[in-house]
Each structure stands twice: as structure tokens, then as C-alpha cells.
Amino acid sequence: MNPDLLPGAVWYAVFLFSTVLHEAAHAWSAHRMGDDTAFRGGQVSLNPWPHIRREPIGMVVVPILSWLLGGWMIGWASAPYDVAWALRHPRRAGLMALAGPAANLLLLLLAALLIRVGIEWNVLIQPGEIDSTHLTTAAVSGPFELGALLLSVMFSLNLLLFAFNLLPLPPLDGSSLPLLFLSKERAHAYSTALQNPLLRIGGLIVAFKLTRPLFHPLFLLAANWVYPGAGYG
Image 1 (cartoon, rainbow, N blue to C red):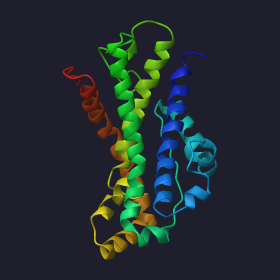
Image 2 (image 1 turned 90 degrees about the vertical axis):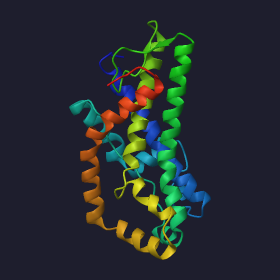
Image 3 (image 1 turned 180 degrees about the horizontal axis):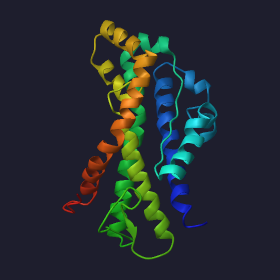
């Protein structure tokens, strides 16, 4: 493969897997708590096809175009759910919403663990300068170079997906967090308000504007957690 294409291919592969796991977590948790809408759509699965079929623009077209045009990968996916079920069971709906970011947090922690293991085994090293594609580097040339790239992207992209989706703005998952604490009557009113199309469009616009300025300091904070005492800044 052309080395210029390799980072983009890795970013897309990680994006696809991470997004599919995020949506499968939504679908699985909803199914476990009484809503089989996404289950019937085949989305309790790590097979990317049901997710791509539902959101081909967000899962294929936009991620690839955003990489080619800006060197940055964005996109979206969705898992269907029964709105009536969510209104009847607001706390279950809140837990279902948080299952997606929890899946990304799991991948983030796994990537951090594997980076630390790679360093302990002397196959990976801590770089002097970092970015979202180079959080770690291989100690020697060869297959570990691909592994270092893969782990770097897996860490960075899942950090982004975790943090972005927890922003308390509709229609992002973080907007459902209050459902865990509100009374059933207030949760019903809150859930109804979250369905407002103008509120959802406005929330997405604000979220995308916040992503770049918030991600860089968050990435540095996370990198300094992976490498205690590194002092990246």
C-alpha cells in the first residue's frame, strides 16, 4: 500500500470498528432493557453492513471526504429505538444512551494498556512529540510500525468519540444523562423537548464548533496520563 494512503486507511478502519461498536452497544443495551427495535434491524452486531446500510453517508462518504479534504475524520451512525419505550422508561433510555460512549471508553483504555505493554516489551517507544496519529512509535521498523499507528489512532479516535458524545447537547448521548436523575414526570417532559428538530440541529452545530478547541487540551491531558511525567503541552 502507498505509505501516503496507509494512515487514512487505518483511520477509516478504526473509525468503522469504533462507530459500529458504539452503535452495537446502544442496540444491545436497549434490547436487554426491553426495546428490540435495533435488534430487529440487525444492529446488535459488529458486522458493519447493517450500520452502513442505515447511514451510508455518515459511515462512508463523509469520513472519507473529511480525511481527503482536511486530514481529519468525522462521520456518524445511528441505532433506531422506540421513542414510546424511551418515554415510558427514561432511566433505561439514559443507560442505553450512555452505553455507546462506554464502548468507546473501553477501546480507549485498551489502546492505552497495549501501548504501555508495548513499551514494557521494548517494541514501542514514547515519542518526543505527539499528535493524534503518533501517540506511540515502533522501536524498530517492521510490523510494529503498523501496530503503533493502529494503537495511536485507536486511542485518539475513541477519546474523540467518547468526549464528543458526552457533550450535553441534543442529539448527542450526553444530553440523556439527566434522565438518570429526574423524576419520571420531569424526565418525560425533558425527553419530549430533546426531540425538537431545531434543538437537535442547533446542538450538532454547537458540538462540532466545540470539538476542535476542546479536543487538543483533552488529548494532551490523556497523553500525559498514558506517559506520567512526560509534560506534553
